[in-house]
Length: 273
Image 1 (cartoon, rainbow, N blue to C red):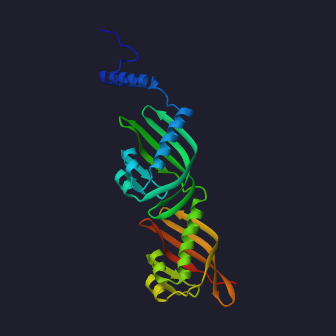
Image 2: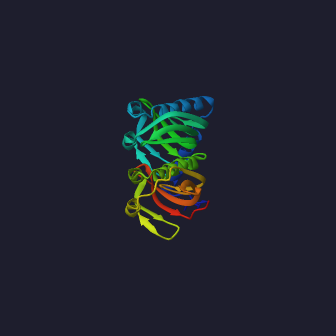
């Protein structure tokens, strides 16, 4: 009778599993680490430049650079696949890349960077400083393709600068007294609350025919934003009375609908002079 051994030999299935893990471990240990350095950064910058250079209305160059599985997600959570992004109206007239860090592993290159750009998206002009981004590029038989792009923030001071333009357009439309201008910038579910407690829907507000104020100056702007909602608190200076300039604290909520920021609600908090 054979003598028992200690520790006991593992069963065949266990031995196979251990052998597989050993082979995988050896393969992983022999794998080349991802490359980085000036040459990789230069390659990444060339690819990033190509992407922003290709952002033009005709999409001719961009369509050859986007990979078949391309995806992009904006800081507001909106996502686009390849076809939808090509259909998205966009154009960049000026951009600057900074804080670039790139790594290459075989035929995949990843890059994190910040971009400042001036352009127009869905007919809305944008001037965004230092927007954090990450991009993924893949080297194929047809050359390098961009496969993914993610916006990791709204940019330094981008919320305030963009909100200033949004609030300014809205209050300028009201000050003009032109109903078509107001209607173009108001959401269908717009409501307004006045200092006396009276509230109006959009239809009631338009029927009340806002009195032209000549000019409207927004100051002391404080903004919060999440996804497709922007909340702005500010003081509105107008020439609406015979006594001269008046200051009215306001709170306005904007919703992003079909790519445009529209006023959804507004509250007036009295008038000071």
